[in-house]
Image (cartoon, rainbow, N blue to C red; front, side, top):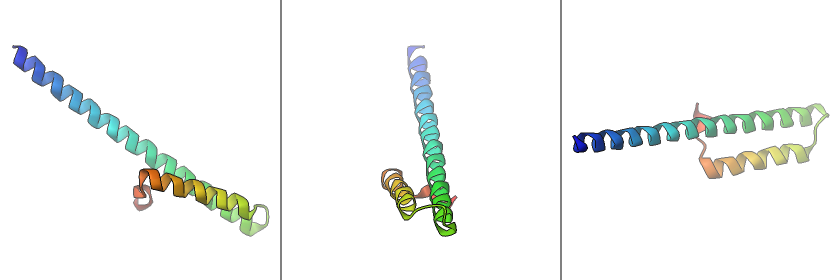
Length: 77
């Protein structure tokens, strides 16, 4: 009986770890998408004359930092 409970506990821990990994992945993708949206908005504002090149560069830098940390998988979705 103890062996069964140990296996069940191990499987539950593995499932929990997989679930947490998926949640982290989804949160990272959402953050990347938000940064990409901010970059687009900054670029659009700059082109329309209501934004600055500095704001566009700051948005690009933030996006590049996210990509270097989390990868660019969100760009493919």
